[in-house]
Image (cartoon, rainbow, N blue to C red):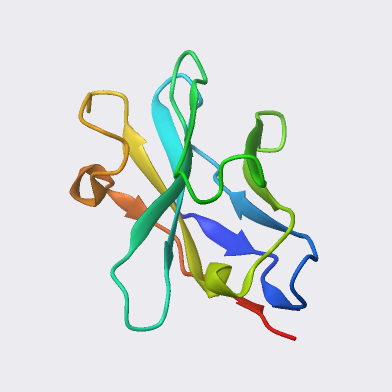
Length: 125
């Protein structure tokens, strides 16, 4: 099984983008799906997560209110709608999946067994 992220690009501050992650084979009952990002010269960090089972959603503080994670189970796809983009949102964005057996914080990257290739988001005037 593979994760395939897409939708990145070059935008101006204040613009919007929607990232998509195709996740065939990752049942919403069994897998938590999340978006992480890695900015230049920074560590990879968690952006948003939609939990397996109950679909509870989590966001990192700096994107809360601007980004929205959602999941279309019929299309096996998770989205990250990013509004009011800022230059500090510039990063490579990755989608990742982990099994429901993990109860640790969603931010713990080592609990994610599946990672997609990243998609570049650049916010610049």
